[in-house]
Amino acid sequence: MAGRIGQEYNIGKKRKGAFWQDRYHATAVETGEHLRQCLVYIDLNMVRAGIVDHPSQWYWCGYNEIQNPRRKNVLIDYEKLGALTGFKTFDAFQAAHRSWVDGSLATHGNRREQRWSESIAVGSNTFTTGILSQLGPRAKGRKIIEKGQTFQVREEMESYNVLFDAEKSDIAPKNTHYWSVDA
Image 1 (cartoon, rainbow, N blue to C red):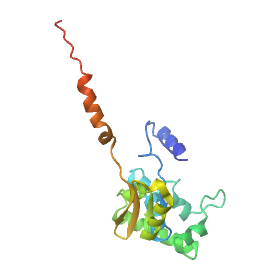
Image 2: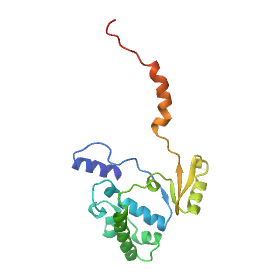
Image 3: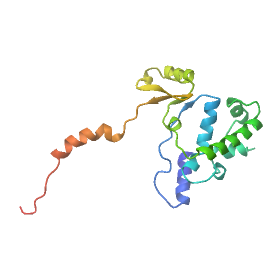
């Protein structure tokens, strides 16, 4: 789906190149408050990208799926989503969702948050500790970071240059040949 949206946008704007900043990155998210925050963050992706001023202007986003539920080709289990975020009815969730998005836009809607784009898991300490435990041997090099009331399972990211600069700098002088026109 991400590829198709990117292709159509590029065709419509007569442009080429990467549409998304990075490849898709899955993050395990605890239900309740953390899921609510994640939904709002995703709904504001196109606002952060400067493509729209409000997520309602982006037809393909979750905001429109929640605020204008489909009758056919439904993508979201509305009742289940409401329950996972702590609501007894979808109507109550829908009203709260609209309020969350508008509130976030008014305060910090354009800010990128690393917890959603670089974490392996986001939630409470118990949740993230459980995820780290479930990873078993794959947990090596990953750690839990606490940011306020939120815990994140992250791995240290090193830039490409940090990994290869030493190799390039050792090779460069050996491969340098000066051209002499006088010879």
